[in-house]
Image (cartoon, rainbow, N blue to C red; front, side, top):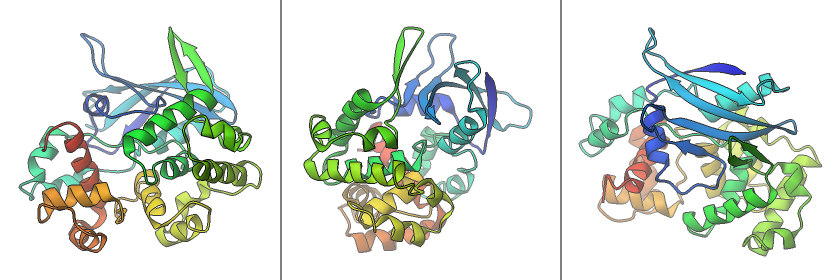
Length: 308
């Protein structure tokens, strides 16, 4: 099966593949840069209503309306849960989010102007479900990003569904039901701490067994999301704001207590040193609905060696 996604631009899958190939990955998102005559691609194995479905995404250039068009092919060719898959992929690619307002504002900033030019059309993916983002947030607490991604990679390989297509093996993110059936000892073998293992199993059981509507947070206000999440074991203000910004795509939100963000903003847009949470929030006020994009572009530029 093949379907199209019409993206609010600017968007460039080739530049996304180039950028994200430099990022550590947990094995779920597969970015393939262009090679010879073949275009860049993005692959991911989704599990939709217990059905594993591989998506393979390319970009079609030169459309008459200048709208970014993504062509999505699936394996199997006729999945059962087509409408749910389309909703998930639209969500993941953040199709409704436009970068143009941020670009217009960033071009007036002498530091960000060259970064926008170098990264033009690069937009982050959202995790495919809110549950996945919640697991990401819990896993990244109080350890380095690289260590957290290595742990999630082990979890994906051990607990995620698998599919082999054209000689490549794909791994899906573990479902709430799979994690709910795990024991603390199972997760400890993957290098998770006892406390984090307990948090993840508790969250998964709330979703898979108790019917907690984590996906329903997509339509709730920022404060409602924060209130709901911080009532769960393991979630504090940082985790909730991180989920809002990265997982729900609320571009007006910044995780103020994040040390990495404090370092990036302080070094490049501030006094040249790490700023406090209070200083960060005050400094980011001027960016209004574009805070998430500022942080993302600084993070990308740092990873890619565009800034030192």
